[in-house]
Length: 129
Image (cartoon, rainbow, N blue to C red; front, side, top):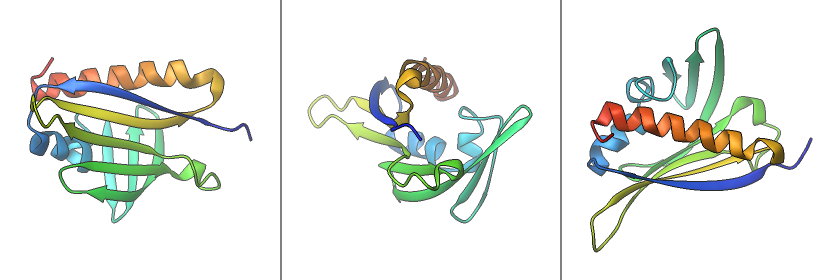
């Protein structure tokens, strides 16, 4: 298996951290922008797109701040995860989402574009676009 490369991207969002957290941490919130539908049983989340579904395990969360998942298909790769973190600038109070994810070297740009599209959808749902 090729080594996956960690990358981070940051997006400024005009919305309250509490509201954003609802959209990144709950199945109903995630299904409004991340995938067509999301089901959860405890720490196991099932993300559904058109004809496919992926399962992810919730590996950590801090209420109001961040959530971290690991795709079940990457279970043998314990270093790989994706995290959505809410960051508020102490001075300006600007709110940013910081995405940490992993991708194969030749798929990093594609993964970043996918996240840009996903966050664009989130901004529309939040009325921040």
